[in-house]
Length: 375
Ligand code: GMT
Figure 1 (cartoon, rainbow, N blue to C red):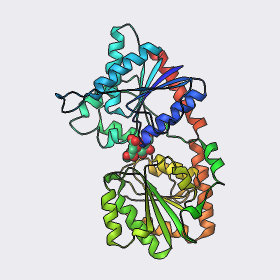
Figure 2 (spheres, helix red, strand yellow):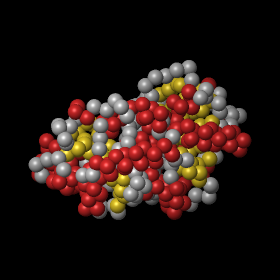
Figure 3 (tube, rainbow, N blue to C red):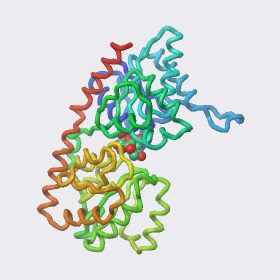
């Protein structure tokens, strides 16, 4: 099958899921075309089955805001007609579902029919998408997609609650390649990060307010008061400056390392003892799943899809959003008992196995076939 994929090409979870999906589909013999404004960060090698088409928005002095959706719709029209794409799969509703619908209409005018699958990822629904400035257009484009999927039951419920969605919404969870992670377990080099008996705690995110970076630091502070530890902060974003101020104020600067955006997350997680994700909202929590796949127990909030992914008392612990005392206590419980830590590590990995790529990709293939039959 020839599959077009539209996504954000950045380090964000939706872009990572879309890219890993495309790569795996290409390995299974499908011809995959990514259509984005830059090459997706996890797409490091192109092949005869894996293509990338760049969307360019020309500068023009009249524009205060460049019309990216327009450029994307035109590019979709070109790529789909030139390469005879069978299905178009767009990740993140804004503005991708909208641009896809416009492209579909233009293609229809030219006698070409393409089914559109929209996958909702989280903030396109729970944060940005339900802003009154966007809501009518987002509702319209979701309803106009031929098939709609989302990454967790919680996101499906939020979508139904916030939008007037009349269509069925199918839940297909995010995934990881468990074999790839299994091979990495023996390659971890703790001493590159930690000194002596220091415990290594990791947080990975885009440092936006909903990730509650201050909670991450408060939890770490409480842990470090009891256990000699180091915090590795992976990613970048608006709350990084505030985080550095907090560390200066609490004299913790030499206990925290900021690594920025990196493709080496696995190498860092692999040497870690605990993963922190106290988010206010989290439709799925892909970063936590990647940690679990590397046998790292997770201390998280119970927001959104996190409570289904991180099984409380099994792969780690979940607490109410903002309950830093409970999160710190749970972290200390795991880190001070080596047999408990070992048990949680094993259980985290066992839970991650449920989300293996081999189980999830066929669900998308099934949906592509359904979409072909609809149109
Ligand atoms: O977490 C973010 O803010 C990035 C965002 C994205 O769209 O890239 O992540 C969302 O999609 C991921 C992949 O499906 C999910 O694992 C994240 O939970 C979700 N983020 C939120 O819901 C806040």
